[in-house]
Length: 430
Image 1 (cartoon, helix red, strand yellow):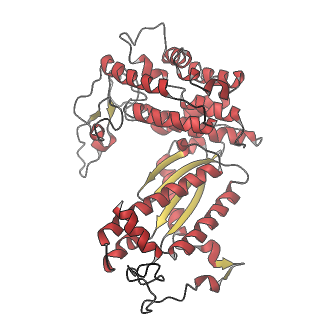
Image 2: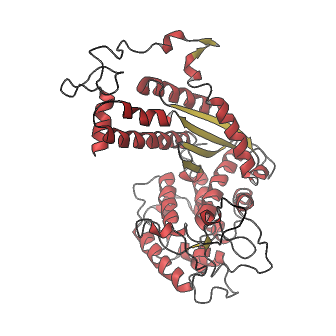
Image 3: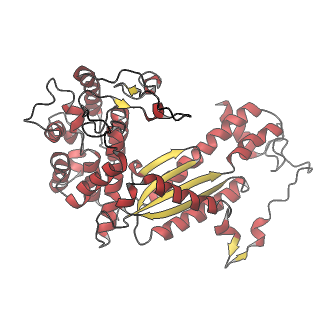
C-alpha cells in the first residue's frame, strides 16, 4: 500500500462513481427509454466536455490506463472486476431488503424512505415518510425532515442535477492529491445524492445512492489492499477488519465543570466541542494510517466510530501503535479523564451482509477494552508501571492550584486559572 499508488486511487474513484448514472438517468423526460442504461448516462456525463473527467488536473492526475479503469467502472463495472463488481455485490448485500409486497418499485419516481420514520415504541408499524430531493444544507437542514408524499418527478431530478453540474464545473484539483480529489468528490456526492434512492425496483428504497457509492468505494479499497499482498479475494475471504472506537469518560469530563467555579456555560460548550473533535481526529488518524478516504468511516456519532480497514499483515501492529499514542496523549493532556479505546474484528464479505451481528460482536469487545483504560502504557512487561500513575505535585488545597478545576497549576495570575481552563473559556466564548 503506497500513497503514490495512483492505480489504487483510480480504482477507488471508479467505485465511488460506478452508479452515478442513476442520477443522470432519472433527470430525463423518458428515463425508461430502453436504448440507454444508467451506465450509459453515467459515462456520457463523466466524459462530456464540462464533465468531471475534464476538470483541471484530474485528467492529468491519472494515466490513460487509470482513466480507463474509472471509465469502465461507470460503464460496465468490469475493468478491475475482482474489485468493483465484488464490492458492489457486497455493498448491495449489506443494504438492500427485498420488497415484501407484489408491487414493484419505480426508481424513477419513488422517494427515499426515511428510516427514522419507521422507528416505533409499539408493535404497530408507522406510516412511511419520505425525503424530498434537495441539496444538503439548502434550508438549514430542514430538508432532512421527511414528508408524506412518496413521489418525485423528473423535473425534481433535473433541478437537482443542474445545480450539481454547476458545482462540478467549479471543481479544481490543481493543488490536490488523488486522495484529496476523491474526498472533494465524496463531499459533493454527499451534498446532492443523500436524498436519492439507490435501488427501488425490487428492493425497499431506504438506502441512499450516496451511501451505496460510499460503501462500495470503502469495500473496494480493502479488496485492493488485501489482494495486493497476494491474497485471494472472494465473498468468503476475511478481507476486512471492522475497527470500533469508543471515547469513554465523556459525561464526567463535560459535566465536571458544573461543580467548579467561573464561566461554567462557556466551559460546557468548549468541552462538548472538544470531545467531538477527539472522536473526529482519532478516526481520521486511523484513516490516514491506512491511506484510506472518508468513505471508510462507516459511522461516527456519540463518541463512537466504526471504520472498515483492509485485513493486511501489519494492521494489528499499526492499531496497537495508535492505541499507545492515544493512551499517552490522554494521560499527558487530560490526566486520563478521557480514554480512547480501539477494538477490531476480522470480517468476510459474506459476514458484512449481517452487519448488525458484526457490530454486536465488536461492541462486546469494546466493552471489554473499557475495563482496561490506558493499558498500553500502564503496563510494562505485564507489570504495573507505577511511576505512570503519579501525577504532578499540585493538589486541591494547594494555593498554586487552578481556581476552576483545582487540579492544575495556575497559568494566569489574574484569572487564577490553569492553561486548560483558560482554553475552555476562550473556546467557549468563540
